[in-house]
Length: 495
Length: 95
Image (cartoon, rainbow over all chains, first blue to last red; front, side, top):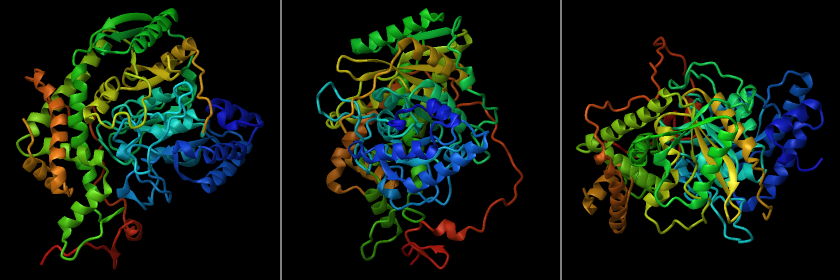
């Protein structure tokens, strides 16, 4: 059987159970696809030996019966997750050579469920970026192209390697992380599905920290059913992360009925931005009509503080980053600069961090340092935290009015060309996350679902935002939207 | 509020990142672009609003204060750029 790498998680699971394929065959198919896709630069550390060993173990487990859903399914892991004995460097030079002595809780849970790790996936350095252009490994290339043009496009970021790998069928699914949109924006740019669960659903233990009050892991998959299957395997309480909740994990897949009759879907007027491309407007209107046709009630809502979400994020996230990244000091792990005669410990810190961090990371660490410094803490950091309270309250108010989910565009545009934003000031790049960042600030679950193509043939996605802890209901609404849109487009293979 | 070169240099020092003198003007300009964007927050009326501490209402779990981990010196030092005799080694700190 050919093209096993093109299967969804659900299809592969069913074939494994039926004995039609083995995990070793699935894994070999993906490993060949990875080897043939060097141009995409998605996989940056390949682990074929580990993969085949785990695939054999999975086949044995499946033969014994009663294997979990993810058993035997080959996946990619974002480089931000620490994986025991396998390079985990958050796409940064400062973690060059770092081999964790431990495994992140999320990747451990996936491993325990029998999933097969194929390797580590490229990303923006420390998950700071929206185009996967800040990685020490170089840019990731989107498998999608504008018609017959050869211009390389961004897969989005920061989980750009995950998005590119899933869209190009290099793996059946991948892990991502999302601090301001890093799962949902790349999912939209590559025509795949990505969900960021409620803050606290997935343990952050062993995931290299960017902004701890915003970071969440989630699955990036070929469809909504796969997102439900993989999310269930990733989440759950972990004593090692004090912010992970002690709450039962539902069977998300069983909640996919496609029945959304009577659900109230909010359309927030503040997301209708000035200068929004007509294609995005139309995508949004079409999605609204689809949910209405499926029996949902559409209501206009207001989230008045939306405009302030990005500025608040660009205080809070750099502030937390400056604190989290203080640990990269050239002492305990990773890179240490070569010192000149007479250099003391301060020079060691300064040179190590100047050499080890890329430009965007340096800028964010310094902005964070500034907003936390004496005299500015109240004016910037405390004010941003107050605005965050207001942003969360906006959502609480509409949920109190009975709204079940909120429909918005996922991104303000389709994928842009690599390098196209180089001359812009940093704020232009930040605007990519304008629709997604509110969800992180409010700690809510959000999912990006591909629902159409633009006139250049590039995928576009819609975002659904759900009530806290109601990922199951959110996935079901996303499933109804997916069914109605009938999106099945795939990038033509050129790599 | 505009950031000048000397403020940029001070921030770089606080962040322990070496920035060459020649790069300071561009850095100050980038700071100003970002801070200009952040300034919008001044439009919001935050009178009487509590700054957010935790996005999900939760009380952090407590546990008994006892040793649950340890004896991993080798593992802890395994990634150090310079480890000697069971310790992290750094340049001389005290004269």
